[in-house]
Amino acid sequence: MRILLVTQMWPSGADPDFGAFLVPQVDELRALGHEVDVVAIDRRGGSAGVKYTRLGLRALRRARKIRPDVVIAHMLFPAGAAALVAAQSVKAPLVVVCHGQDVENLDGMQVRTVSALVSAPTLMASVSQFVTVSVLIACPAQTRSSWARAPAPASRSRTVLMPYSSTKRPAR
Image (cartoon, rainbow, N blue to C red; front, side, top):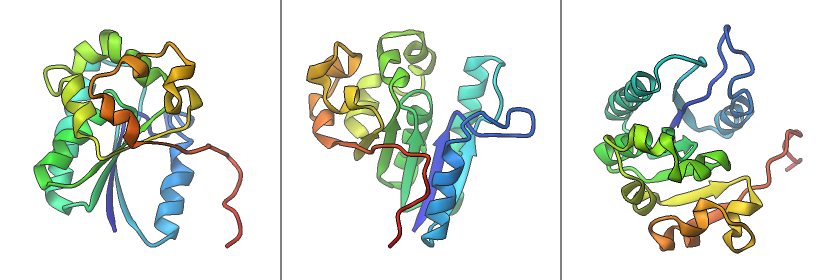
């Protein structure tokens, strides 16, 4: 399977810890035989508008080049918005991995930063599957999070809780 991963956090020489938790996930997908292309922001700082626009343009170009079977975004905003544009351009399903703060940002400045690209309701309604590592997102009745008030209430029925562990994969 061809997978395009879009993320606003990826380690680099200058920022080796930035999104380092994603590397084992990509390694595991590749070990399972999937082709994984990563489009990412690999450094902190800089203009949010410029960074996120470039992420969206790079994701769009890469999707058109590799024609992925699925597009996966790590973080609802801004990576999810960038990934949505890429996924729609090649008619691929979009999976968004939500971590917590990205969901809280639904009401904040981050959403307004990417709203020219994709609105929150459009993104929420367009995602094929949400995956979360947060029980507060998976079970919104237990929290006062923005997720409980998020647009497209049906989106919560497409949410799967994935307990995150830094341990090695289980034996098969």
